[in-house]
Image 1 (cartoon, helix red, strand yellow):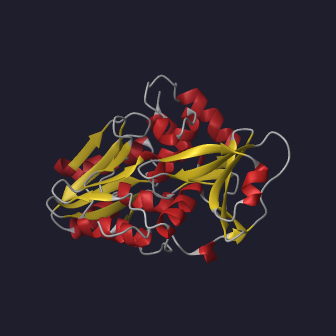
Image 2 (cartoon, one colour):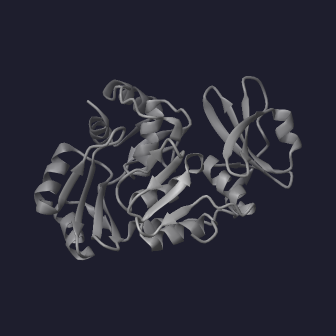
Image 3 (cartoon, one colour):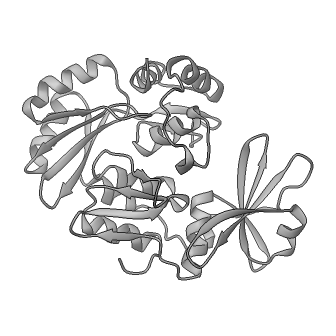
Amino acid sequence: MGPNELLFWLSARREGSWPQYRSATEELVPDDSGSDSKTLEGFRLYQRLRFNLQSLAHVEFDAAGCENGWRVTPPTLALSRQAIRGVVGVLCGARLPETIRQFKHAAGAAYERHTIPEQPDVIRVLAPTTEPLIALAASAGMRAQPDAPTAILGCLPHADILAMWRESPLPSGKDLKVGRFEIGRKSYRWTTTTVTEANQMLDGLFRFTRFQIPDHFLRVGGRTFKVGGQAGKFFLLAKRGRKVLHYDRSTQCLTVPGICRPPLLADRALVLCSGYLPHYDAAKRVLIYREVPESIAGLAADILRQPGL
């Protein structure tokens, strides 16, 4: 039993509550992988699997229509143009054994399947152009999304726009752990602070954790906004002109500090270039996204308001 069986179960149920997801994860996926969880700031396995399922576009959590729960996305072949290998199609969304069997039969020699810890198997196909993969998806009874990374990034607001967040007072009360995101000269980290200090600071990103559930708040000129944690980091990085994205054109790899992983949808766009989650280099403490075309790296940098790659 493992992540594949978890996705089978989720696909059969289609949607459900958070307790149902957590219970299924703890029953179907033993926490014996031995993987390094530092890239996700020490989260438990069921949370790490949640983030991975989201990044790979298999499952949505706490989204419109499934607040405080989850729903599986429709089976989709996400297509991405590569500079050397032509077009890569990544199988996303609902997945049952019969779905895979039909898809493998239709794909023939173009079919690839790779097993990686803490995520369902990566299933992808390769073709010189888009048209054969669109036809393949139709024959397997699923939809196809041409240029999926571009389509996702093209819908995202720039990281330095405050209007996408709502103003909200900072939390108060007991059992709160408060952290402040600190941007050093060459490092980034969370430091411990207090509710009082957070209220006194005019600018900064703060994490308030109660019962292991974190909420993030951005202070800008004394105003307070409730934000996504990663989005808040890139807002601060943009305002300070700090470059954290680095692109290697020779290897088509995009690198970012582990603590500065892009927000979910930007992360998903980079993941769907190849179908692989970013590799965490523990020695350098960086995440490495593979097979990212230069055009996608440039578009992501623009959305995240990062200086030129």
